[in-house]
Length: 367
Image (cartoon, rainbow, N blue to C red; front, side, top):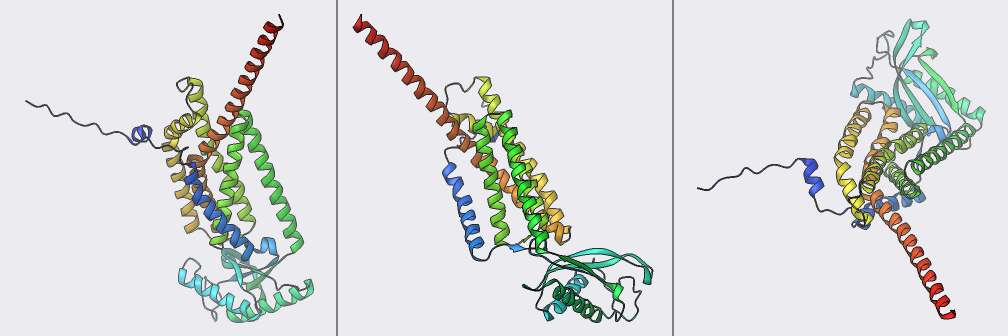
């Protein structure tokens, strides 16, 4: 009589841990997609450049009341939560801006208080647009006044100037100051990360981490260039946020590498083996952490207004890039650098041993 044995199903963690896939050995193949994306980004940067927002180029802001409460009877009422109405509002504003050779860079819903109409927190749309190149401050002011009048007529508000408010301008000098402060913030963040990783682990891990962070920033920037995402203050905040997200998975893997090294189970084995095992032991956690964060950011990007979307989209790209680099690139870089360090140490020990033996032989001959 034959006995039938029930086959046990391995969990996802067990199947990953028992797989023979070598992450470090395939590093060169994992680098190819990243290199291609970065090269495309470089080409786009050299040809068409970034889609800079008014935060960096300088520009003006207008806020348009949409009469959702039907307070103004002779004007059409819009609901910004209705996609059709919102699209019509944007088209009307762009038609007006087009008469002056301009276009809206950013649209977002907002609220407005109008004492004259007893409207408080009424629905409105805020538009940011870049000023005409070469215009003086007085010319920009005159143009904005003309745009305000044209918007009043377009929406049927007549002489009710309080329904379309001029939010002022962002000057290029303010933009340059913002750019410099953003650059300093990035440098400070990178410096603190280097110090943290170097203290917690060792310098090899710090170098691998910084290379991975640069990889994530370059990949994110390349996708921003490809999809023409607006580069503004929110984008800079997104880059700093990406640094924090990207280092999370990397630190988890380096923690496991350190634990496996201390365990003594892999004594004498190549560092690539230690790195591969550590990745397999932590990949499930990295997958679920990345997935839950990405889903949240994706929902914010879908539901949020334009400015929030400009912040959420780069973060979503950076999260995926950070997962990719922490699993497929950073361990391989660490294995190469750490092997090189051990090899140099071994060579030095061998040279010292040879020198000692040669000295002993010389002393024997002399004796």
